[in-house]
Length: 180
Image (tube, rainbow, N blue to C red; front, side, top):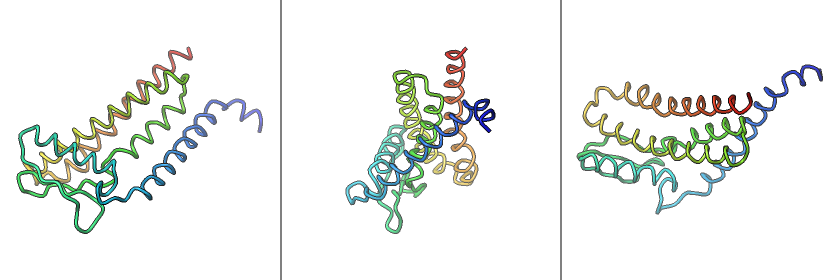
């Protein structure tokens, strides 16, 4: 038993670190969500900011936007040119993707400074690309409503998850160089 643990020590350490960080961050985020209900920042502060910033970017691209709290569920309704195109829900704020990203990077820890800098850069990039993704999705849904399933279910998730995979690959490649 101890020989197997010794042989696979790095794999076991990776799995335990990943799961530990993921569980802790998920619990902290869940705690945040349970106490974040606010009429000023509906449905929660992060999701509200993502909706506002996405609407601003749609406006920047030249489309009139409308943004309001959904009357029946915890989300923000986003309209483009007076056409309802999207609901910005808690799952749209990229926090679950960011938690997954951070847990993976921490599992390949490279010292505090390198790891924290990479995490900060990655989190900012994920957040910004997510805002761009929501804005472009909203415009796409306005212009091509018949492509809703393709855009929402395939293209735009591929953007956010593809970006995270590329960041992971960059981190692992860098990690292997440091270890080798």
